[in-house]
Image 1 (cartoon, rainbow, N blue to C red):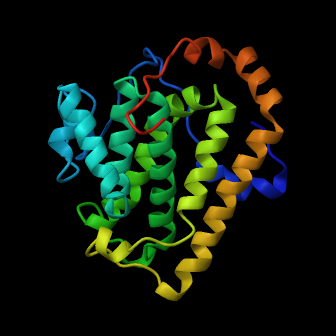
Image 2 (image 1 turned 135 degrees about the vertical axis):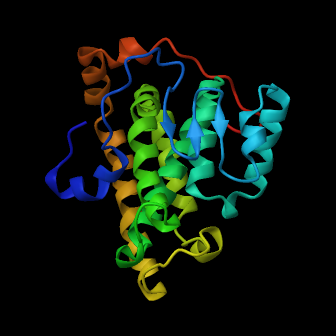
Length: 236
């Protein structure tokens, strides 16, 4: 997707991912230690971990619905893992909503965290800072590979995520023990990130035909076009 130079810096954080995995695109094979390993799966992201890993469909769906009722308290780890599991289990349209929400919260965390106080390997802030990068880089190719196959739906989801994130969440409660930049800077930082997501939605609408043609030419449509999505109860 080609963007005008003025839009690149604002939009790029939501698009910069490596090439899609070579494996079957219906499943996302990846791991980010210590939180997630697709083999199993092994999930260690807090109170929802067992439900997200459950092979019982009803238990998994109930976990996702319970997470939705506590949406404003979820951290980006929970959002990313839920997105991946939703995708793997066939709820792919719902997965895109969770994925773009996770991207937003992960990028916001990285922008608000005090980089001089991240610490080093083993320190929670340091691990979280790099964890959000890893989840985005590893899950993004397949999730975006699928998502960009339906530009209309993706644009709708992106605009919804933008609308839901005009206010900064309670970062200190969601990420206890992490040092953040001065809270007075939070609104302007979030506004820049929010504007970037809005620009992405605009360019999705404006360049829909071009994006669809590029996907046909580079094989992305052939790779992901056969995938379907099971409607999620009360969601996409």
